[in-house]
Length: 494
Ligand SMILES: Cc1cc2nc3c(=O)[nH]c(=O)nc-3n(C[C@H](O)[C@H](O)[C@H](O)COP(=O)(O)OP(=O)(O)OC[C@H]3O[C@@H](n4cnc5c(N)ncnc54)[C@H](O)[C@@H]3O)c2cc1C
Image 1: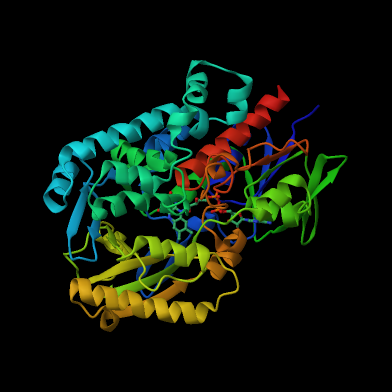
Image 2: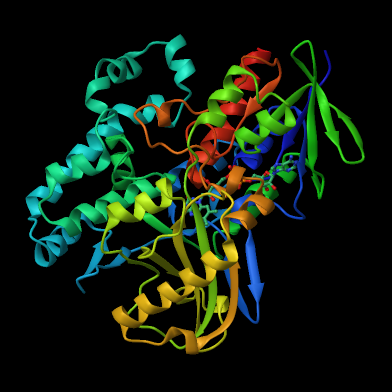
């Protein structure tokens, strides 16, 4: 049989990752992307001299990207440069406490001991626990497919299975944090890590404490040139490996015969191919592209709760704000209620936790002289028929009021550029089901483990990648998903 043709649906980080790897392995690879450029959730917004990364702002697990380029025999430094942060985030609590999450764990422990009722030892024990979770789960659940683990039992995945009880699956993240810490502020700080995959700390399993381990053991990074440099670098690499890109081309159906992949239906015709790698949101892949909403997996995924979405304000602000860091969090007073409003009542919180990222603090060209580019985000419910104009206005007022109280600044007067991204915009622009950021939420013990695997068992020649599939959401995991999907393709051909 001659060279096989692969169609990749979507040029998000997962799709780009799979595409370059498959082209490198000798496949003829075509990427179909409905937008005019790559990146998906990680695209760019420009206006009035300001530049904003539209979605992701925090970069972790740099080695995942470095390894990816090296495995394709490319010099990582020719494509991307990361710079480690000294302060991962500055926290503002509702009682006026300000606390710096120093990248150095010892400094961070001292800061917690100085600012809260918890001591350095509790922080050390907490991080030891997080590291243990990471050591037990990473190999089987992060870097590989658990399906492979079931096939090839080795000492690492056997140890994971034997310690299943110790993985924190049946305990909430909040509960474990409360076991380690006495002070509500420390608990709130570490509870926040559930939002890194769009879940609630009061329901997500404590297994997600691997996230603070990852952030503090491997660091949090600035990406020189902005986050968009990541999809840009991946597309350059993919082109170099021979991938053909087709922008403004939306796939409307995956064509199959006798459960074997035959091609894609596009607006202007049929594209014949042997294999499809779907980087589209898994639920859209089942419901729309396969028309399979009634299949067992389609039914399962449609029944599952979606992860949270975001309401993002891009503000070009006049002034230099020395009291703000690159990453800043202004916490709500009642975290429990905030998540209840998001997940149960599906409304934007009345007292939202506000995240502000300012890249112009290190990339001067991201804002005009004496101005800053503020990416202002709150966790919001996924789109479920809310009136987003109304939610946006109310949230804007609440954020401005919180900033006025905390920083004693009238930010509204200083806004000279403004744009908004609501959950419905996110859905329309990125194809994410209901605008949820990470596919299905992990608000149950099994949520994280029942994600779509990277290979279909129903359709021969269909593979999945991206933040809604295994191993999960976020840029490094989306990259890994593409690698795992490509490796399944290669293994199936062997
Ligand atoms: C506001 C926000 C903040 C975030 N913050 C962070 C962060 O700080 N750190 C972090 O690591 N991650 C963050 N994330 C998550 C991160 O952006 C995603 O997990 C990751 O980028 C997802 O990549 P993906 O491979 O799933 O592709 P996606 O980005 O979901 O892209 C999928 C692509 O497929 C295309 N597509 C879909 N259907 C079709 C079709 N039928 N035909 C053609 N094309 C199609 C879409 O247009 C899109 O370009 C954030 C996301 C958002 C939105």
